[in-house]
Image (cartoon, rainbow, N blue to C red; front, side, top):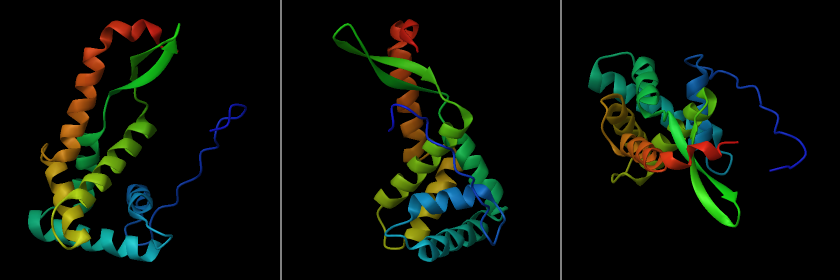
Length: 156
């Protein structure tokens, strides 16, 4: 991270099939070794699985899962007078969406099973139903912020 300049935010182009920016953001999180086509194939298969399992629009299910997983507050380490405090900070919308996508992808990878498309579909369905590991991670983040509320006056 540069100390002089802030990083320029790149423009996100929507994915070719659903014309949705969230799917292209999720593609980047699942991407390995630059194999974008494979990552997109995994996501499209998981969206088909979601459509078959829930009988609902998979895009709406994905959006609901991201909404449910997005944290409102997080803690950041702040060094004051030789000691480090965990200071609770509000999460902006873009960062919250990024965290939600990162957690969904991470916990989908950690799930037991053989097919990444099935694991991702199950994680998205669980997150849209307010259960699963990504929701637990959000609750854990909120608890950390609540526990460190005493240091809220150290915000920068």
